[in-house]
Length: 419
Ligand SMILES: Cc1ncc(COP(=O)(O)O)c(C=O)c1O
Image (cartoon, rainbow, N blue to C red; front, side):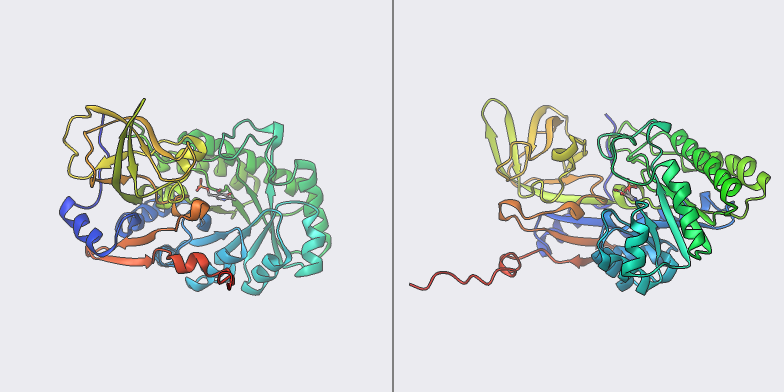
């Protein structure tokens, strides 16, 4: 099986571990920058292209700062994410709020920042009006339901998923907003997650361009931007190929020419809010083997657990594992690679062929740069680990320290019983 590469040598990583004990996440800054440049280049044909990074994927302001320097905006889904984007230097329409079940405080903060608000439901119009006022620009999230096949275990199929407005509601919502004085409109959807087939995104673009035509015909509204959401997959398995972004871009361009430009609806800005494909492949969870256990199966127990990366436990997701320094060794053993939670699904890999593992070996778990650290939690009193950035000059920067026991107790004012 093909090996996946890591951007550091055993000697380099050993030095890093001396300063920052495992487990930790480490992100490759230069690779992230290059990846973003490729994406922007692929859409150079578009009158205006904007990728709003889905902050939820890697909510770290240092990462956001790097992305902002590369020209990205932020897609935020909560108050904390709006503040993160703000702290990373983003402002105004560089930020979009795509939230669910949104509390007033998030709408207020978005309005204060001048961010674009992407409403998830027709009933949110009055709620927004009441709590934050109606802005000049508004976007709606479309859920095609039975009109579109797709979805998967991460996002659910459109008909079953809680997100967005139906087609009828959508047209009503634009009408209401036009009557309330909104001047500028966007249209959003997100119907797939971790999809490797480029055609899927082209089909989504076609669906959205048709809808933009319908909105124009029925309501005389020229939509200013269309946001195809995130969902571009990454090759978690070594035998998988990365999505060809040029195929997506060229397919969308063709649809744009025939459905938008030819109908006098240009210029239409193209937006995306990918998370996973921006940072996912360029982040690694580094962990040390604490124990080996041989019962009915062979286990290796790490100093990390699903609190550091829960995708394998949550979705049965595959994450490739490199045993540092043993890259060339034969894959002669079969292990379950486990974390330390009292949950039997706390496994990074099940029945995985690996080289012989010794206690003290360092395991590098790949593709942990998005929806990895971000999904951390404190179950079993586990502490969230540090995040590091491998800089372009080879140095390593601590971009989030590890939680301490003091952090864990900091929300409690219970000092113990006085006896
Ligand atoms: C609204 C929205 N946009 C964008 C994303 C990012 O998706 P991905 O990281 O798969 O690109 C998500 C993921 O949950 C999302 O819910």
